[in-house]
Image (tube, rainbow, N blue to C red; front, side):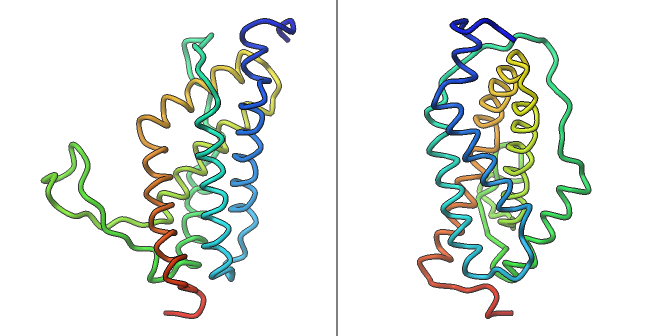
Length: 182
């Protein structure tokens, strides 16, 4: 463990990062505890959790990595797939969204069919991988996991979170209960 007062120690135990870790853990626990029958409550709770994750992440600050290699992922393909399926079942026909094709995808003027469940499962994977490493309590690993998460936020998971949040917002304001439809 680093000595208290070192830059790494101060970063990994900063109030902002600890608050983000709590929000990330809460989001992951919310998804891990899904039963598949949630409907409207899923939409409301997902909006709350995603908003909290995004809000707290913005205050985490910057750091530089200590090691050259990233840590191994904690979430397996099977876990990701099971979560994706549970969310898909909850949202039913409201899972599908259209989005503009991204850079390198098809003709950038085309609309692409996408799912909320994919975005939510991808965000889950990033956050669970991070919190699994953070919970080990090895400050250099905690630091590097936070740095890597920030890099991936800019690359993809931040956009996925916002896209899912926007789609869930539309379901929320339309007062749609996915459990009552389909």
